[in-house]
Image (cartoon, rainbow, N blue to C red):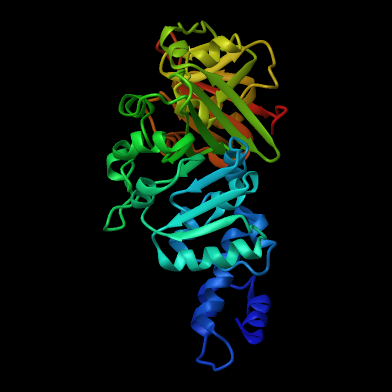
Length: 395
C-alpha cells in the first residue's frame, strides 16, 4: 500500500462507504479498491475487534469474512479456556479467534482453504507480533487427517451452503462435525467447536457423544455462539454454562441437563414486587425451572419464562424490574393502561397478541423508561405488567 492510498484511508475513514465508492475515480496514485475495502473493514471492526482497529497495519478481507468473524470479547472468552504448548485453528477465516488463542501457546497453526485469507493472515499475524503462528493453506479435514496431535484444536465450521444460504444443522455445515468428530478427539487433548446459536441443544447432545461442556455465549443479551469443549481424557460429564457479556462484566449461570429435567417449577399465585427476566443465554439453554429454583423465584406460568419475588436479587443473570401496576385485559383495564402509560417498551410472553398488535390496540408508543410485559399467569389469565428497570450489578 503506497503513501497516497494510506493518506486517503486516514482522511476518509469516517465517511460513508457508498459515497466514497460513487466518488472514486481512476488514479495512478490511489488504489481505490484497496482503500474502500480498508475503510469498510476499519468501520466494521472498530467496536467489534478494537485490538485489530488499533493496529494500523491490519489488512481487511471482503465483507462476508468480516461478518463471520468472532468479536474480540468472544475470542477472549475462548482464549481463557485454552492453554498449552501446541494449538491448531482448522478454520482460520479472518483470524480473530486464532490471534487471541495463539497468545497462550508456544506454537500455533492457522489452517484456511481460502488462499487470499491465508495471505492476509500472514501479513496480519506479523503486524500483531504473533511470530509463533504458522499459516497453512489447506482444507480443514485434509489437514486434520495428517497433522501431529496437539494440545488444543479449534474449529468453526462454515455455516453457509454453496448458494450462500445460512445453514444450522451439523450435517449441513462444512466440514461435517459429526463425520470428523472421532478424528478431532484423536488429534487433541482438548477440542473447542464453535457452532451456530440457532442449533437445538437436545439434538446436539444426541448427535455428539462425550461433550464435557456446552457454553452459550451472549453479548449484551444477544446470543452469539455455542461453544463445545471436549476434554478427551475426561468422561462425559455434561455441564451447560450460560454467559452474557455486558461491558466488562459477565453474567454466568451453570447447570447440568439432568438438573433441569428433574426440577419442578414453583408457580406464582400472584405477581410480587420484583419481576425477573433471564438473559438470552439462559433462555437458549432451556434452564426454565433450574433458574427459578436456584434463585428461589416463582414462575408466572409453565410457558411464561418470567419470574417474580418480593426479594431483590442484584446478581440475577438477566434483567430485573420493579413492578408498579398489574392490569387485566378488560376494556376498563385497557383504558386505564392507555391513560397511565402513553409510551413504553413492550414485550409479549406467552400472550395471544404480538407486540405490534398490542400497540395498535392500546395506542402505546415505543420508548421511554416504562416497561410492559403482556403475558399469561399460572391461573391461565392474561396480565399486563407495568414496571421499571432496576440496574443489577452486571449492567
